[in-house]
Amino acid sequence: MRHHLSPAFTGSKLKGMIGLIETTCNKYSEFLSKRLDFNEPINIYESFRRMAADLIATTAFGSASDSINNPESEFYKNGTKIMAFTGSRSLVLMGYLMSPKYELRFKF
Picture (spheres, rainbow, N blue to C red):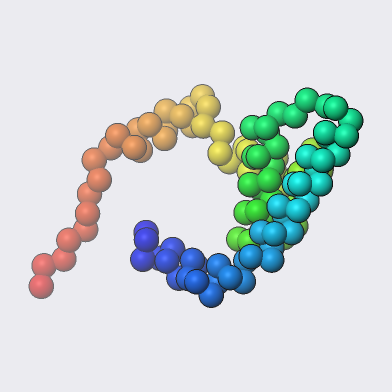
């Protein structure tokens, strides 16, 4: 897995993502400053999840989702559905993680 993912995280590619990350972090900073001005309580867990969704959308998929400011963001809603391991999905995941791993070995 590392062999396949390593090319996506080279130094030059990460340097190219800096602008996208900075833009998303600035949006998150503006979001927090607006909430502080209105003296509203902030659900930090939820707001960081939304910021992470925006970072993934912009850096990995090249799409701006604006999950931070838009509570009805399709990207965020679909992402939370995919990552929700409840009910039968949790049993399937547990079975997958507990099953023995078989390696395909070639003899030369």
